[in-house]
Length: 392
Image 1 (cartoon, helix red, strand yellow):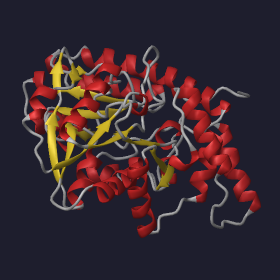
Image 2 (cartoon, one colour):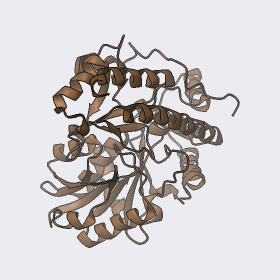
Image 3 (cartoon, helix red, strand yellow):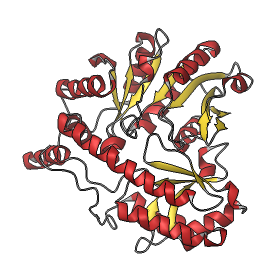
Image 4 (cartoon, rainbow, N blue to C red):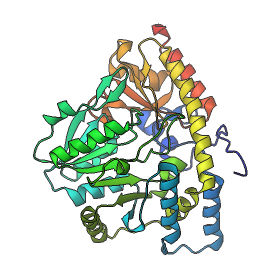
């Protein structure tokens, strides 16, 4: 890589149509001028230079027509998945969607009917429940078990929750918001649970590149064996290009692939040329070097944030194995949700995601985005300590 990325650079994102910065005051009452946005899951970092160069090449050419010729794009995906995840992918397995929320919605549409249930292991990424409910399906909440400060699967308890109307299971791997990298044994348990209850298994692995040093993500496709699985991946979280709204649904099983293809065709979905070009550039050796540097930097932010938050009596940040999203439990603070939320927003001037939006089990939590220059993380820790200084 020609130049090391500068993750410490402060980039002014206000007034740039950034949801994270420009919507903060309207939603949280936290002003952009003095507040710290730690809610929307995008990063305050520039993508690798190769991505910017691909975009600049498009603007130099100056004609913005329909995207065609997927060979280079597919080859980049195949190379990345094999090199980074030891997962073999074939060209005809790949479908490009408008991000993975759209990918989830398409899976719900293709593989279930109105009135069916879709299983979620809660607390979990809030957009899953939103699209499931909007499609007229039922969210089947199967709470994760909290053991020694981290989440574990609870298959025995879930057996009595899942019924004959439940048709699909959406797995979040690595887990958002808990930051778990599921072990191979846990993933095997998910496959057996899906087999037992005859569920379509969808694995959202959008955070699979963002793992802390020493952790290893295992693709569900490498665990499922002969059980069909729908894989969802994207460059958007990894490289901070979420505005491209590009994602991939990758399906090896012919029957599931045919169903998904039929819905894609019926809805007239085709890819965004900017997203395709940027993803092709990102899935490269230069992009890989950048991700390695990013994960090391995020690990440093994690250590600073966790040390500071865990030093406040009654607050506990869940050990983060992947993602850049800290999941903080306020249950030991001895105060109602409205009070600890008020302190974070009105005293610390920090916008964080409400734990209740992630479903059952999130009631005493807030989620904090650590993908920002280190000085901001340090400032956030100092503000939280001051806002809860009466507990110390």
